[in-house]
Length: 488
Image (cartoon, rainbow, N blue to C red; front, side):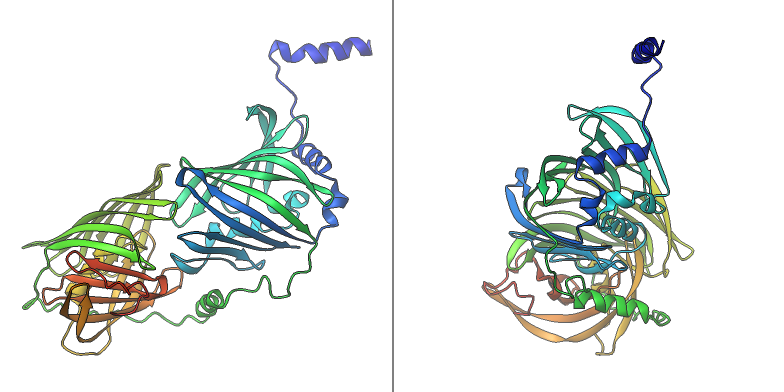
């Protein structure tokens, strides 16, 4: 009878009842056993992973070093030619990032929660603590492997889906919706080339895909239980400064914009900017500034290539009334294949945003001053033309303007008219008006910009020293020594 029962049970799936799914505890336990066992994991307290990172389609290859320590410390440092250093880490409380392009920032909200969870050391042992819900959701064939599909739901953020080979127990793939400054992005990682590091088996080839972009991380060597410096996971000074500033915030300064000088204001008709980073041209922007009886229309487009990153700004437009109060803003761009579309209307002290990163529009309402200057977080730079049109050149007293970073938050910019200066360019020079701008990003990162504009308020030169970025109006080429972010 027992034998007959086993035969019937074995045949049962052929009649459509489906495969009995194991519990998450069973799937996770199989993975832990297959990769070395609980004792092998618990014997590890720190790791250093040395890897190469390869953007094959872009012909770009760099290095990646990852430091990890129990219970929740993490630091990853990537070096990419033409881009520089990209660092990200967590000390168990603060999750941060520091890039050559954007500088330091502290992660908040879901992005912080994701980073802290990913920084958990020996995470396979502690999935019950990291997720509030877990279920074996089915069985699928993934990359030629018959797999169990496990869905893990964190307290904050979107569910993560993992696929485990039924026979070997090894993880084959993960899928997740990643929260980032660009919005939510669907991503997946394929795991292969499992090798033993000490007594634990781990994948040494990770294929990362997001929005039709792909890069491969190949782990070359792993140091198990190395002696790490006590300060390895300390926050970098520039990140600590942001944390200190956020912890000592005072009441926001009421914004008091300077007069717009409507009686004498000249309206620039637009232009074309060439943008350089560390002396090499990385982007171009073409834009128009139109004035009518009803207000101003700043409209344009651009493109950038920063290492493997291709940015296409299909359109960035800001419409204001005659007093420079924003009415509408439209931003359409792509980072690789990732869409970044924002449509915003302004009324009653609010910016009503509809943000779409290719996964459906999301509504977001943010309080703003009625006369805020609307710009983007990075490129394009030409929307800052509105500030150049509004700032007073009458004295050198600080002027404050509310600046709305589209889709993110409003910050305050302090503007000082420095002087009328003689500025040299390749083959020519010009007498220009120098404006110095200081403030911080929505993430608390200090930001400084310098503008040199002609008497028609046209942007001729822009400098962002902290990011080694300079921009030049068409017809005004940089000197060969330019690129340091200093005035020529």
